[in-house]
Amino acid sequence: MRLHFVVIPIHGGDAVEEQLNHFLTSQRIAAVDRQFVPNGVHSAWAICVTYVDGVAAAPGTADPSKKKGTVDYREVLHDAEFLVFAKLRDLRKQLAQRDGVPAWAVFTNEQLAAMVRGGGPRSAAELGKIEGIGPAKMEKYVGPFLEIINAPAPTPPADGTPKDAPA
Image (cartoon, rainbow, N blue to C red; front, side):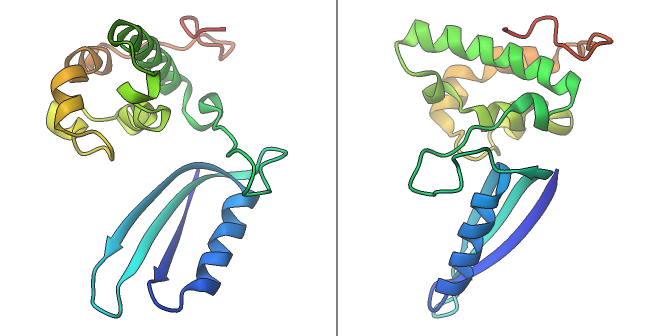
């Protein structure tokens, strides 16, 4: 995966915004992180795009008015990371059904991926640093997710197909 950085000034940033939109529609995007940088008339958005190198956007995603393409986490995560991701996704589904909410209301796929990338966060404090995970989600859901994250790492099968991953 690769990173692409962009700064879009609040005033007069139309050309940069257009370039970013073109880039986003031409690449397989894994994540977009943004931060507002307040600096008076020089305020701007700092944007970091994580994308899959050498993989074009999925067919049909080049038109920004159409539904955004989905990320195939089997492609963007290492095998061992995907095994943990699949377990977290199953837990999320169970908790969402229990609470009568959509799965994304518990955690989004990108939040689950952030939990497993590069070893992921190992404590509640580190989990709380993931964008979109606030105090309410921390209090309600963090415990069972940390149990899975901190469990011994599963070993992917030789053929690369996750054993516990849903078909």
